[in-house]
Length: 166
Image 1 (tube, rainbow, N blue to C red):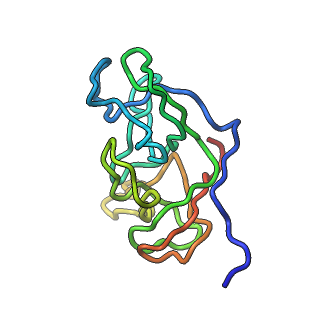
Image 2: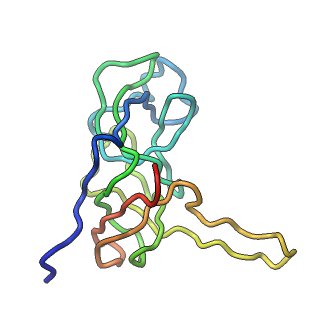
């Protein structure tokens, strides 16, 4: 058994305050879009100006919710997200150490997760062959998180970390 493993960690410099909601289409004052403490730890993406929304299957991970306040701001939930660091996850499918990941099957809004966030392997870029310039882009492409610890097998726990600047 290993004597040392990477663990979850964040720097307070990477935590920012933001408006939060369940979907990009949520409008101000829509109570069904409000988030709660049950949503802490879930992955989010930028959904609109000054607002992050819950990520869905296949999305790049932009940040993780670290706190949700009971008050609202401008008709939206308000809280904090962390843009970089290391996060404990559960793998949906195999992922090689160093492999980039995206959101797998997310837990519904307002439902506390019994396990860590589910992630799956991203997709490598490929040349389509129809023309010299046709290709399929790598996913994730902009917000890169890679597996740095764990067995890499389906259902196992691992640790991912942000690659590059947040």
